[in-house]
Image (cartoon, rainbow over the protein chains, first blue to last red):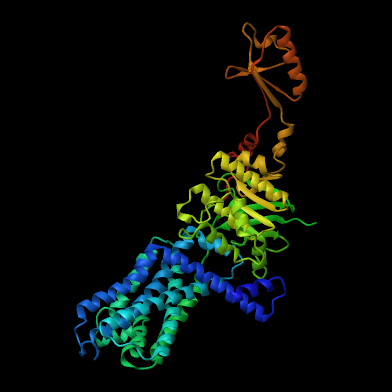
Length: 272
Length: 310
């Protein structure tokens, strides 16, 4: 509130760096607020993106909650294994999946063009989306951790490593989501393409079942999902800190996604 | 004072199709100018180049003193222009007030949200979700989004398509009010009545080039054309009995004349002396639509979109 008022008072004067920073923050908060309103009121996004991972962890808990530490789950209990992978799945859904579908749909409907016609800078639009996606992911993961606790999975101890992984993962998967939305021109095809890429990738990365094939693990280790799963599993279940190698692979994918997004992103539904 | 919009020799091709071949016109500050023309005439492409959505292949364009293709001034230009596009593109799950308030946050000095809601006639619907609005109400919301930044120049791309006649009158009233308040408006339309009712000047496009420009009342020499006087011949007379030369069409007698005052006087005098009336009497000049159809008809010389042959 104070920020908004100060920014308004200063709006008429030549903006110093301090005032510009406040105006930018205000703009970002403004964007996040309306992204949140649109998200939570849309039953499709709220149910599929947000509720699904929570329901998934409840079901997995009911099915496998009794399975204790085993070598099949890499020395973890079944739920210790699933809480971090489903947490990762929720980030994939609310960042990659949501952006790929929503941006393609907004472009096709002409909403992006309309935004582009306003003075809102592009960075503010995308930073607002990223912050919105991180917020949804954080709430989702908190719920997943609480459900896990009900099934006897202890709260994680390395919160700092989790936050770092989460923000990096969310940023990378947001960039990949924007990249996919940039490459697909047809909004009807977007959900199918996004899922077609994601589902096999999650499967070979051990999201649904532990993978015991050395070859598959080596391949998926260079793709974005397994590093993210592992980087979350460490601090979640094994009381380990940040896994820098996994984070580096994840960041590299994020950069690649960002490059494609910056080069190919279009606001206009019709090609030039 | 320079013009709000100055365009000359504008060119744009998509692949091998010349969408815009040679377009030039100006819009003075405080003026309403209508771009008229059939589908594919180049209206939307021209508008999109001015709005900064498309690059141009050639020619010059200046909007509020800036080149719309120049990236460094793009934000400043967006701050001072508003636009209403053909597509209804609004977030379905926000309310009317939220949609407008969100856009207001993007401008340095926006109009008041409540003021704009009143201006476009959405008062009482502030808390309604956008998805539950009717088509016409959504168009008004679109118009509100074009106005919220308090622009100096407003682009309206077919602003009243889908409006009922009453809503269209209201929209025209609003647009005239904006002009009175000093706003410059560039609009496209298919609707001749709209161009006639709103525009100070009309620019008629066909096949990517300007074929006529001027005030709606004089476009294409409308004012200088011959006037058609038509009526039904009283029973018992033939066209040869009339005091002026005529021909017949659809059961009516038609007199075409460059001196309508004299011709009418002689005709009515002739009828009154004989105790008759000229049933179904009409006097008309070619309508804007007649001029439009004449100037844009297919096969009109060098007006079809031209293809490059290699």
